[in-house]
Amino acid sequence: MAEVRVQIPDEVVSELQAKLGGGTKATDIAREAITLFNWAVEERSKGRVVLSSDQSGEKVARLAMPSLDRVKSPIT
Image 1 (tube, rainbow, N blue to C red):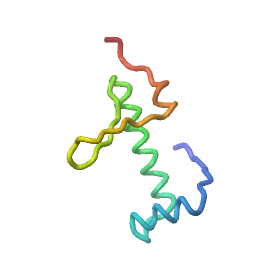
Image 2 (image 1 turned 135 degrees about the vertical axis):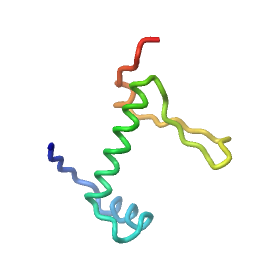
Image 3 (image 1 turned 90 degrees about the vertical axis):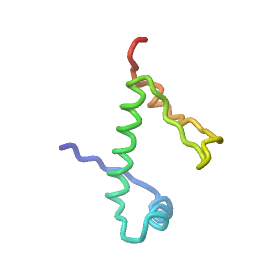
């Protein structure tokens, strides 16, 4: 298993912990962030885009990350 060490500003971790509940550890946040990134890469590899919308589905935003733009998608 690979070991990854990252430095995340304390205020970023604190804000996430406040939104998720005080018992959330920085390690859990990092693990879930990698899980989400892996999912986004898998979606891009299928030729899909990752979107976010408001509850009504009317206001849509596309996730823009340079690394996702590098994902090879299938030839259509």
